[in-house]
Amino acid sequence: MTADGIRQAIIQIISEIAPDEDLTGINPDEPLRDQVDLDSMDFLDIVMELRKRYSIEVPEKDYPQLATMSSTVGYLLPRMESL
Amino acid sequence: MGLAAPGADNLPDFRAQLLAGRSGVEFIETRYMGRVPAGVCRFDQFRYQSKKAARRGTRAGAVAIWAANEALRDAGIAIGDGNRASTGVFVGITEHGNVETEHEIFNISQYNYDVKYWTHHHNPRTVANNPAGEVTLNLGITGPHLCLGAACAAGNLGLIYGAQMLRLGEVDLALCGGVSESIHTFGIFASFRAQNALASHEDPAKASRPFDRGRNGIVVAEGGCLYTLERLDGALARGAKIYGEIAGYAYNSDATDFVLPNPARQAECMLLALKRAGMNHEQISVISAHSTGTTSGDEHEAAAIRQVFTGPRFPYVNNTKSYIGHAMGAAGALELAGNLPSFNDGYVHPTINLDDPDPECRLENIVINKALHIGEITSIMNNSFGMLGVNSALIVRRFR
Image 1 (spheres, one colour):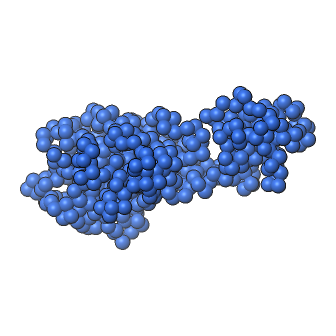
Image 2: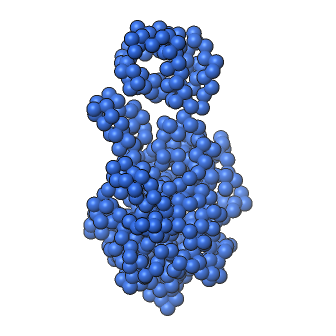
Image 3: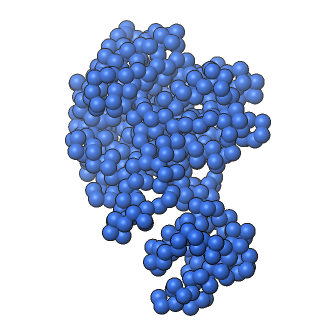
């Protein structure tokens, strides 16, 4: 999966978790939670969906890596590029 | 009041459905059990709830949020800084958490039962206060909330608890009644079937037939009905539209069996409600009967009613489950709602599907298959009974 494919996958997951949100103008370098109404339970949903859809395990110590879209893609790329 | 019933999402439509004798029961497909007759509610869920809140919450929560918002709108009450702390939310439930637990077990079955796929939403969805708590989150209500587990008497118990909290002065407004999400759990259906108490019929509209000789069990339904309950002085001061006045209530316990009802205790419950209302049995205009379409349950309630209402003047009797099935925690609240407009229109809606009345369920003045205009209706006794022997009787009086 490419970096752009991962970004699209994350957008898809967030759109299902926060279906009332407009995700068209996400700034890749700003924290996602500053741009989208996501709380800690929603964040756990993102982790769960990565597990279910891509068999990706994100340990709790790595949660800060998922703060922005850019950091999320950077964190996931080596784990998902073979998918 | 606000409601979601099988066949209607507001009181005028619900009343019209009942006066027309139109069933709201249909076939649904359930996991593992296939097609069963059930009462399904349709309402504009996202009028009052965001998609995200709906995804995070439960069906019972969604029904409760609809009913609460509709009730407040109907009453002309807005929740704000002046009343959010003095409003309580009291919601009767027969059960809660079965739906969510079954869904999660099915979910992890798709992952070889690996519990790391079990959702973190499970606990907030299944705590027993969930539907009432979702209402407080939705409306910003900071007063007390809880759900009342009282099996199939729970709808009445929601109202009774609301009245008690008002009498104690702990709230000034009670959003109270009951909800059910039970059609979304196969276990309810399967357990009734195992008990030989699940209704079946080739025509779903005819499956729920209390007091009929051909009855063969319960039609499970979802639904909800919440009322804005206030003390009379407060309601009068704000010029409220008053549907009725709670005149008396009682609830008691059989202490005899897990499932079989006890007509002697049911009769005691009705008599205690009458005593507390300061009324005698001849002053009740209409009995909204609880009977669910089971062989013994219907016989027992009929026997209890005959024991209390001995004439010479008898109340009229109807049964709303014949239209909507058994809405579990919502049943008592919905069945009362269906009857309340009779104070104004003078009609008693009938028990439908009563084609061959069972002599074991004989009742004077039971209204059969066609609405009856009797003119002045001044009081309703609303019966709701449940498993583990919980009985309730609520008397509502016309307010003039």
